Image 1: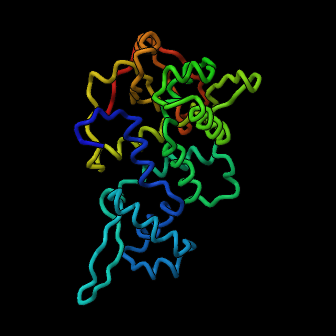
Image 2: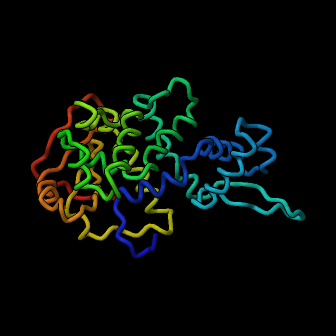
Image 3: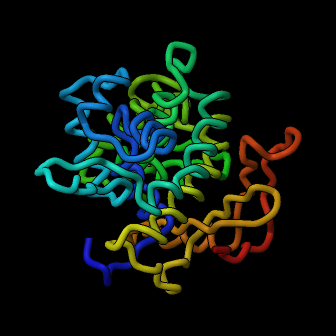
Length: 276
């Protein structure tokens, strides 16, 4: 993505998730964080990461800027080490673990690092955030209704994406197979902290991410932790301008899973401004 592109909070969250959520990513980052620089052979011998996966995940994390290679003096070999960006992932991992412990499908079978990978990986799926934004007002929608509001090539692809998100517990469906209506779940409502942390990390450390254009914030939903708000802006096709105008007037407070005490979502009458 060119640096001049309009990049929303959702775009940044997806870009970050694509780079840091592959299986074994969190375990590798934690290993380097606790042990310091290590050669790949040392990592392979001391962790459960399969050799084939180790090469894949190190390449992805290098491209994301989370780890780097340190040449070993007098040798052609190198060690892997965390970068500042890699060390700054702690809040991202904390938000993902908090959500996963409460909501991740299949959490009981996973150790914490892999649960974090799976939680963050939900936002590497294209349109995850955009779907949640459209459903967050509490209104259940059909595929044709969602298709008018989302930049998805066709209804078949959209239906597949919705089915994946339903399997992961972020949304639910009701009605007959030919007329399913889709709604956000409690798990989906509590993803705000992950979006905020992923987007903030990407904005600070991914060179391909530009600051969002203020003009692109026309329609927004505020994700809040009880102390502040992050506004996520979802680009909409012309056919959805009416809906965009409605969402400009109304924003929804989503309470993060780590917020104190259970609090139901509440529609606000005025839009919350973006915080960084």
